[in-house]
Amino acid sequence: MAVQKNKISMKNISKTFTTRTGDVSVLKDVSINVFENEFLVILGPGQCGKTVLMNILAGLEQPTGGEVVFADGTPKMGDLGIVFQKYYIYPWKNVMQNVELSQEVKGVDKKTRRESAQKYIDLVGLSGFEKSIPRELSGGMKQRVGIARAYATESDIMIMDEPFGALDAQTRYQMQEEILKIWEKKKRTVIFVTSNLEEAIYLGDRIILLGGSPTSVKAEYIPDMPRPRNYTSKEFLDLRNEIADNTDLAL
Amino acid sequence: MISKKEKRIRLLLSIAGLVIFFGVWEMAVQMGFISSRILSPPSKVVSAFIQKLTDTKPEGATLITHFLMSFKLALSAFLAAVIIGVPLGLFMGQYKAFDRFLTPIFEIIRPIPPIAWIPIVILVAGIGMSGKVFIIFVAAFVPCVINSYLGIKLTSPVLVNVARTFGASDWQIFTKVCIPSSLNMVFTGVRNALGASWSTLVAAEMLASTGGLGYMIQMGRQLIRPDIILVGMLTIGCTGALLSWLLGLLEKKVAPWRYR
Picture 1: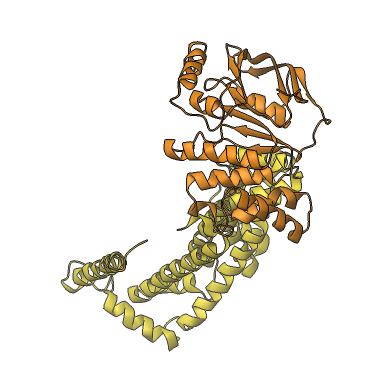
Picture 2: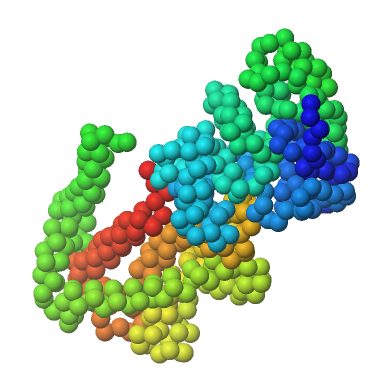
């Protein structure tokens, strides 16, 4: 494997929340390196603080300890592409307006941002649905809008926080294939968070397993299988068992 | 989608409801369960309605004159309440300083029923137009503020975060995320305000009016003319329903994403 360039280093990230009943430590000494253009999966049981970690990466929350170092300098708000849990797209905006919003708030003129948004709408396979409003779209299509919207920030780092968690099983498989296709076409550094083991093995160049209370990095796995991966192949199932044995039960 | 047949059944049910309501009422009077001196039957109300359209007797003005007086009064107070109340509620919801500064005063004013304002309004503003407008304004103002405030407060924090990660400024978040997201709540508030202003009308017109639907109803009581009272009441009811329906149409135009 070629030498990989470090894109993001999370160094000893800790996060403690102060609540009525005392301090709750959620993350403790989480250190993860993210390489350029890799598809990194962060796997952890539900409620383990994955979203908190992503919010810290995105700059929406501050860590109580440690730091995040970006190789190309700390990004400003608007420099990262983020796909949120479920499909948080704006119900009053149509597909085009949703996708172009990140450019709109930056003050890009209408023609330029529409062209750019169209490129990503085509990329996620929503051509022809530009004028549809979210209520008229299926769950899978809504999350495609979320992905196009994140890509349209033109960021080279994409954070995806359990993007397929709200989809039904069938759509979920489809979207997993789709996200890899999109990533192959437009290589970006992807940090993909999930609590689903199969999804992690199917997608990841590397898998970081989180666990413990407070949460820290438990192990790192590299699924050494060519894509598209087969859910029922022996290597897949072996790795699945290996990770499952090492995983905490969801809280 | 609703089929044509389904639509027809729904329409039929609505009509049946109205027919039964007025039918029972008509029967109750005709068969003598209720004296027609106390309660006029619908047929009498309809003929009184037609007559009152042009007749100024017995209290001095036609129904149309009364109606226009009331309508202007209620509408101007209602519009003033929307124009002042909605932005105020939106700002209170968005900006903590506004919230802290205004909420205590608002919370004290809110539980006072509009009618309780009448005596002080008479002392301060007299019995002219401005006093009545003020009372209706108070009635409509409260729901406008509360719903706009709640609409902002109920904006999904993730939708706000999405815009924040795009690098949106606070003002952009307010105008592009929070306000559109609260529009449905605002409309509900405006609709409640419309109902409140229209129904406070009668109370306001008790302020020694010389005209208006409230005045006509009052005079109907003094002259023991139940048909005139009922014409006034039903005019208020039908106008209220019509305005509410128009507002619903406007909402579908301005904020169509909630409807199928």
